[in-house]
Amino acid sequence: MASRKEVADLAGVSEATVSRVLNGVGPIKEETRRKVLEASEQLGYVPSALARSFARSKSGNLGVVLPYVPKAHLFSAYFFSEMLSGIGSKARDNSMDLLVMFRTPGEVMNYTDLFRRQKVDACIILGARDDHEELAAMQQLHQEGHPFCVMNQHFEGQSFTEVDADHVEGSRLAIRHLTDQGYRKIAFLNGPDSYSNSQERMEGVRLGLQEAGMELEPSLLLKGNYSRRSGIEAAAIVADRLHEIDAVFAANDRMAIGVMHGLRERGIEPADFPAFVGYDDSDAAEMAVPPLSSVRVPFFEMGELAVSKLMHGSVGDTHKANNSDVAVTESARALLPTELIIRASSIRQ
Image (cartoon, rainbow, N blue to C red; front, side, top):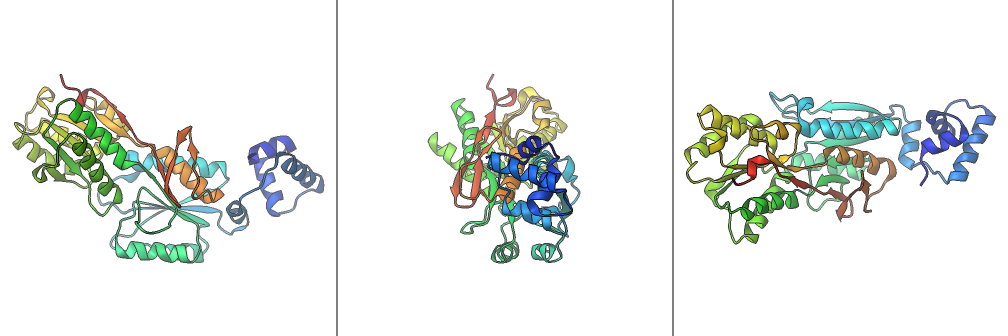
């Protein structure tokens, strides 16, 4: 399908002018209007219903809701910065502005109020938790027909528009890589169960161990909160059992690097570390000592896809994001593939 830019190029006008003509907004010269309409007809360009609503709305904003995380700099976190970059890139392509909002500590976000007060025309929700109040707020959004997309969180049994990555497969690949090299005592440092991706990582770990004829030992299941600090705290357990634990898989790179740091603080040299695999493949993974093997998650492409689904209503189809196949497992949920990147931290010497 033709893009608005192609229409603008053919008509010899700006993309903003194309938008005004096709949405009937503002004064337009008749000759300009005729050129745009002829170019649109020739190229078969049809703007989406949501794109038209953006052009006619009072806000023109795409809302992005971020979680409240105490003592954390979200914009410096690879997870959020990459997704926001993808969202911002695609929003710019569609002539939208971003309105970034943070949840208030201890309160459930009143999503519907954002629409009623015309602060946003669509909304992307990051960092949602699987709890009753959060679910009820999103169900109200869904029932009222407001366009929204949930990123990196799954609500079982709901038909919300969701964009996520295949965390089950990503974790399975990580464990398979470790077991293929003969590692048997594999500690798993996971995040809170209130996040669906923590549950999915756990499922992937169990599958990977099962394929190797193993089971996850409860004593090797460690709890963190996706922060580097929680990794440093988990290092105490790993250090005490260093004679037993021969590999550590962490549910994100921050925790994996935190464990490494905690071991070094205890005088343990990298040559004596267990094998390590992280998750996200952040910039820090390659700079870690030793360089950290990690499961790559296409956060930027996830952000782009979330905006595309809202703008074009492409729910329940198979999508392409930067030439990556996207598997759709439910009518409104899209999963992007993950990939294991192998570096020195997990290679048996």
